[in-house]
Image 1 (cartoon, rainbow, N blue to C red):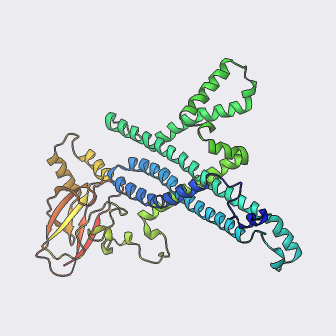
Image 2: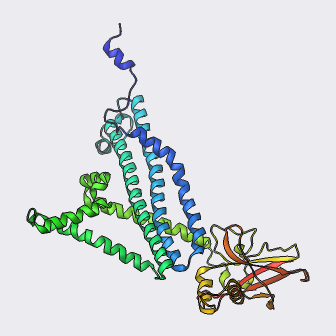
Image 3: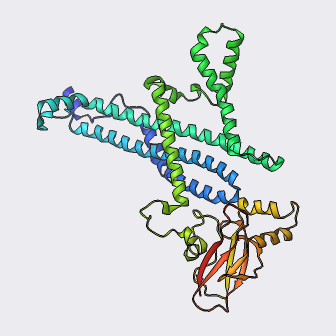
Length: 422
């Protein structure tokens, strides 16, 4: 018969008794979701870069606000799941190492001085305590990431609803809605709640029980709680705030939000202007040498439709066939404003096309070219565009230059230059 001591020695070492009961679910969620979250920011980039050229500048800016909130939430989740997996891996490693060395750290074999040994052993404590701290830290990171991302997703949904409502008002009633309108709507919405919380904290105890002021204050707080504000709607945040300090939690939340928003904005800026980052200060600026610039966005076989702006383009820098296919995308912020000034409001399609043709004159090697545009679209983005077929059969071999005009009196009324070779 086996003695009790021998049974204890033969029994496998299990997880610590105080292990967080949700550790398995946390690992499952992080392991499955991390791959999706790492792809979500790139998907959001493609969506906003594809949809921005479809709107006038005012609406494109509002869409950008929604994008920043949504991408910030996606970045927080992706970062959270990666860090959580690393912290859980560290915790698992500590548990495994303790099973191999159940006596813990043998400080006598580290060959350190007595003072260093005392300081280090005091900071580390027992291995069981280190394992418990690693376990708790992983769970807190998981909870904080999910909570903060949920808050941002809620804000994103709210801003998206405001954007849709503003677009409907502008379309149906012709009332232009700008970013300032949405900001003021948000301020008017949040100020009463902030004032009610401040008043309740400092003067709530002085109100008469059951009095009109107390009933009004509670009705106001209940109303905001029902639409998602307040600690009762976020128990995890309430737990963190109550145990780690409200100011500390708020400061950490704001810091994470600002860092995520900065990362989202920077990535968008890089997607639009990749040459802004790098040691390229001495390289000639292509914007100052329009006629000598070979921009990939002007050629169908080289352009990146997801990241580059909607600009006129041809099929290739080297033209082999008899025609150059010129495509001039319709830009609502540029062409729409020009049409309002030059064409009647209820002009027919032929008149509108004639106005667009006058605004986008074409020169070949600095000589005016009689071009008849047809109504078409960008085949890869399905956005409206003007299409013209230019006969180049009689052109000599060598370098040639197309110059496409822009609507006059526009802030971006700089002609587009597209070099090509025969």
